[in-house]
Length: 248
Image (cartoon, rainbow, N blue to C red):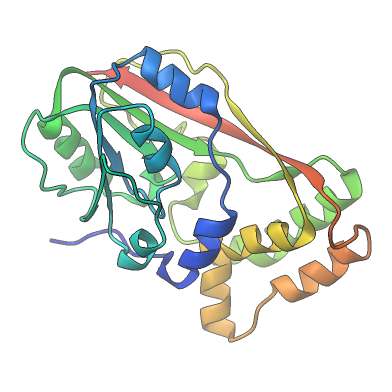
């Protein structure tokens, strides 16, 4: 059985350390539309950014990913169980899950087969929630211009197929259930220069660039940004979250 390519094992440590957490209001929304006693399947969990937050609110979370290296960097909790498995073949019993979540991973899946798996494991009346976040935006105009130029000129040619769905907020991907309104969440953070570079290094495009060219383009980016901001200075950054959710 074919599975999605693994774009993140090589950058698993950067992913775990520098990827943003999702807003607590998003998890509060999921809790309001489900129940604390829910069994949750968190699909494409990576290093468990969403998995841990879900386990803090729901009875049981099974978090699956195809990258053993990513899972090795994930946070642990008694009611949180990590399984090495593709999105299209979870191994979960039929109609055993109350809530299926996909955080920033849907674009890597074989969507028709994943949706069949959701239909199999999700209980009638259960909730499917999928979300992605936009490219990063820096509040400082000068710094943002530098980063966006890097994004377009350096990173963009190296994104794997599927990245376009992140760019359009999953707007063109089919959804198997009637959708609930998107509440309009966003991620707001402050980052130092090393944290920002660590985040950029976690991109699959940069991993592919480094693998092909045997050089790291984020060094030059850090130098350019460092001409504008101090090493320990914190700058405001944000991402727009797009949520697709609906009941079976």
